[in-house]
Length: 350
Image (tube, rainbow, N blue to C red; front, side, top):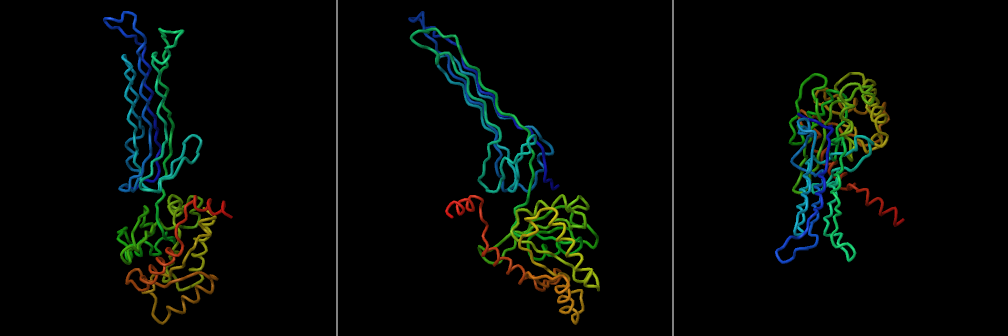
């Protein structure tokens, strides 16, 4: 089951209380204070787990508590710190404060560890308050409460390339052809009910990931169809393949309308996403008579005013697929992913 949103509650451990104690030794009848400090409460961390690809585990467990610190004891013994709690999530998980809607952080690195609830401070024993004027202090400080907060987790797939298009454009067939993914394929709308990831492997050390989401329909950005639930998964991609079924109609004008529909939905959902590098991929060329293929492609490009890169492919036979994925690899290598801190450094230098 693919689950990409979850709400959970996290609570850090309380700090252990400081101890009130006095020495009672055989030869020291009036011994001084020896109450030890308590231990610090355990904290809660959200950690990356590259073996996970869904938030389904949070459907069964929604509350997470770290351990409390142990209280101090006599003979200046300090209580044990509470163990921290690590909550594993998939790469691409956005962490929000459910009450303020503030973005706390985003899990993008395999070794990432984000503090979401700090453990309570340790209590202080009476031995700490001994002074020349107060040789028998009875003062202690209890441990502090651990932080507690409600979190909203939102998974956004980490992929280099995203596939967009109307239902039945052939996106799932294409990702099956060029990657190791095996999404369901059939001849009816909304075959794809959940996003899927595949890896394109060209040569040793040269590969990239592709994300396929359910087909978009007009009004998707406003909640129609399935697309609005998954458009967010395209926000981490760097390149979009806009898949169009070139065999869908004998009237090229209707295909141009389908291209415009997708462009409008992307723009209404996210202006930055709409302006991202996008290539037109005319699919199912095997279903068009050979004599008509080039003419139909040129007419679609002319009517749509397309000025970017375009490709003619067949996800069924593999025609043109090697050229498409090869060009995709070259573009990704020439346009490496930039981290926000890199942009900030460049602005500071300028």
